Length: 124
Image (tube, rainbow, N blue to C red; front, side):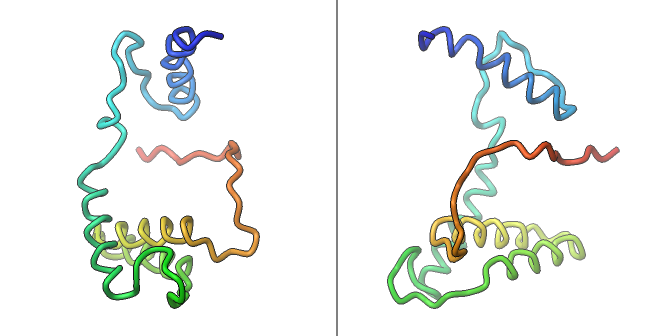
């Protein structure tokens, strides 16, 4: 299949996923702007906190860096967010997940993209 043919069907498959998740479909005539699906404000908070953390704990991926239980910390932060509503907790949890992904301490770490059939629930 030619690249222009692939580009032409991308919006269709995007809408197929949106329909499956119970979301409103997008116009097939309007190109999707990445800004619609990304929070630059959230990313900015993440970057600032990661930079500060690199001074405190060492740069990402540096040798001899102390190991922390990031999964436990991230779960604690999500629980704290649910109790307080403080968005800082979400940023901290997201950073812990990114650091775990990059420095992976899990002995069976791998990346296998798959659809487990589970999706978020719609809150009404």
